[in-house]
Amino acid sequence: MVKRTVKATETTKPARKRAAPKAGPEASTSVEPAEAAPVKPRARKPAVKRAVDAPAPTVEAPAPASKPTDPDRAAQRAEKQAARAAAAAERQAARQAERAARRAEKQAARGAQGRGAEGRGAEGRGGQAKPKTGAKSDAGVSKPDRNLVDAAAQKPAPRLAAQQDFDILIVAQGGGIDREAAILAASLRRNAPGFRGRLIVAEPQPEGAWAGTDPRMSGAARAALTQFGAEIRPLVAQDFGESYPHGNKIEALGLLDPGRPFLFLDSDTLVLGEIGAVPFDFARPAASMRRTNTWPEPPAYRETYDSIWRSLYDRFGLDMDGSLDLTQPEEHWERFLYFNAGWFFGVDPAEFGRRLRDWAVAVRDEPGEALACQSLDPWLDQIVLPLVVHSLGGGRPGPELDGMDGDVTCHWRNLPLLYARGPQRAIDEVEAIAALPEIAPLLDGWEPAQRLIGDGLGRRRIQPMFAHDDPAPTEQSLRHRLRQAELWLV
Image (tube, rainbow, N blue to C red; front, side, top):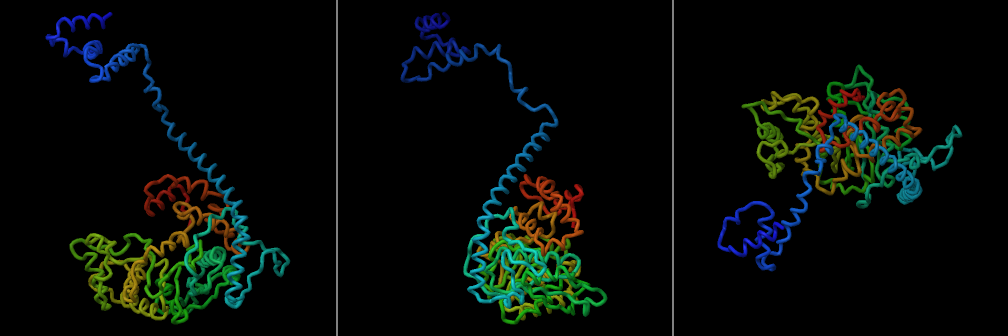
């Protein structure tokens, strides 16, 4: 009725414009139908709107009811998400276990074939013949296949290049480092069956710079390392020893065969893939880039990153400018060559070790004015390492070495940090190795393993604590939260 009345008015008085500014759907509806339909195709929209708006007074607003009013709602959702994640992880582990069983025989066959082709035999593995699966020991107990022990094994690392022949050097001594070394040796034999080189373990002796204390390994750790084919060599430290235990890696290079390529690994490292297939260019040394801004700490108004590092390069006759990363801004710490000493490699351990040892002793004994306010402990090895690498024509590792600290190795540091930030494959591998008969005796009485692995606190409590952190928290933050939860077990 209203529509017809407005139309009549508009038809009889087209010149009046008072009705034009009139608000409301009726005004717009009456005017637009009078115009040509092709020009205003949306003439029916106001009518639709009117029809929708008409019952508005009777509609109840649902918005406030949809918003959570319970303060515990977020906690409940978090618990449900954690439960779903745990269930998904359990299902994934079951599927992975089935795949692992199928892969085990293939992997064992490939390893046996590779070892047979090399013809190294037991002598090439430190004189220890590795028992075949199912073979009985002297005690008559059947030894399980190590590949089958890993019920939650992940997919193997991708095949890379042809296997290279080089030695791996680690350090092992009492106090837990020997336990870590045995775990490393087990992971090497499990996950790199094609490795052609030797695993050489440097064991500090209770003399020289270690006089007055006995740093040697436990008998159980020594037995485990031997069973996994490691070659143990005694290390008589002269320059560092108990005053700077990190110096063991510096002096241990002197135990290796001169002229034979080498790779040094910290003992708290896992081998997750064919490390012999990593395309190391031994003539161009490099080291781990998994580092943070730990050294130096330039004092205000006195020294800079540039002046501190340049004093070291100048001292040993090196050109620092060729080592700079010019993509980084001036006075940013990443502009300067700096490594984590968790792994490094070179073509000749004799020359590499000589420079590393001589320069480290020189910096320790006479730091110089630029380093007068700098702490050298425990950073001395990482201070001198970039100088040696640069002096031998090396530098930062390229993308071809991404497997280090990636798919091929994992520097796990300690069990709480492994569960907090480690890749799932590394966690699965440590738990599988912990069940091996050679390793299990080493974990007896070790609280971190008993609580985090045996009692399941690593998976049940630590992993959920950090599962949804994005970006990943700093190590300092991880340590703080783990201590608050009474889970910093080291």
